[in-house]
Amino acid sequence: MINLSEVIETNAMIEKENLDVRTITLGISLLDCISDDVDRLCARIYDRILERAERLVRTGEEIEREYAIPVVNKRISVTPIGIIGAAACHEPSDFVRIAKTLDRAAAEVGVNFLGGYSALCAKGMTEAERLLIASIPEALAETERICSSVALGSTRTGLNMDAVALMGRIIKETAERTADRDSIGCAKLVVFCNAPDDNPFMAGAFHGVTEADAVINVGVSGPGVIKHALEGVRGKDFEVLAETVKRTAFKITRLGQLVAKEASRRLGIPFGIVDLSLAPTPAIGDSISDILELMGLERTGAPGTTAALALLNDQVKKGGLMASSYVGGLSGSFIPVSEDQGMINAVNAGALTIEKLEAMTCICSVGLDMIAIPGDTAASTISGIIADEMAIGMVNQKTTAVRLIPVIGKGVGDTATFGGLLGYAPIMAVNPFSCEEFISRGGRIPAPVHSFRN
Image (cartoon, rainbow, N blue to C red):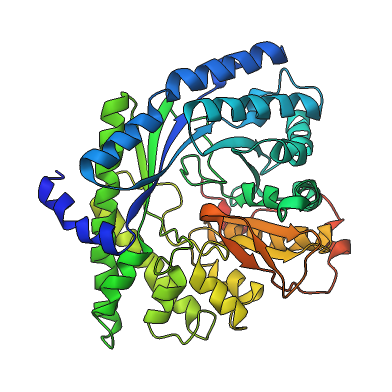
């Protein structure tokens, strides 16, 4: 059981080391909202979200005050709208109406983001999913809180290259629609291989169809805590290093378990999972890059970076699994460029490239995340980067994702500013050689041989 002494032990972590509960995410099933009439569907969605999430923000704030634990974000995820809107939506504008309804409901209950404007296209696309994908640029340009995700492949099904090619074009169009804000629409759009049903982190959160009517998932993060712990073992061998990370991750996850259980009890909604991902912020000292450099790298991106990240990710998982019986979501280490000041510094120093980040994604818990690229990057090149990352996830049986931001009107040497937790990012160079003929082939890349496990 979690007791008061464990809460007291975390006080220094909270006050000095940027420990926080990054998000309480309420997953809401919209399956029984389905209708063949768009007006009726939107009304049901709005009412369902208000009914389920009315007390979410207030409950999070009460837990913050009573336990002195920062709960940074309160969020909602819903059943993928590509499913919910299939019967009622006959053109992209119908889906945009749903997006605006979701945005209005999110504003009403006070959450900062709502995820689930999503399509599950790992093997093929329904007509409704094509329409939803076509609506994404307008939906993200005309809403404030909506996040969108598209599943493009899995280890069991292979890669849907038709959808990969389409998403390259959609990302470019989304960037153009929000060009006046450094193409911020793309910061709310992510594509996945092996997308998890219970991820509480945006932009990829959605409420899986196998989930209960409602569930509480919590994402807890503490790069600053890990960094502080490693400062005490400078020069020690890898066994000591690994043990230190594992013990610290245990304590961080226990904090998330406490908040998740308490939120579940107060809201009367089942507890789902704790996602123990180390998610950085732009705050100084709250950086995955700083941890890697504390391990002995001159800069993140230097030789040894992938090995250091492998150790960090594995020990975070081992510590977390001992702290909670229900670890899920992504759970590991995020390496977003714009949200991590150390990563930004490494890019500016010339130590970190997209190719090195891609190698690191074989190890980390997500993929190429919050990377700003030149606005004139070809859609086929974006699709090629996506295909590479999806292949890593497919072959390695892990979740991988891509959140690229082609910043319209900017190039290498410029900076894109997104604000808040999204931070800012230097524009990174991409390989100039074309893959258009490869991407235009169409069809599916087959699943790897080790996917056949029945």
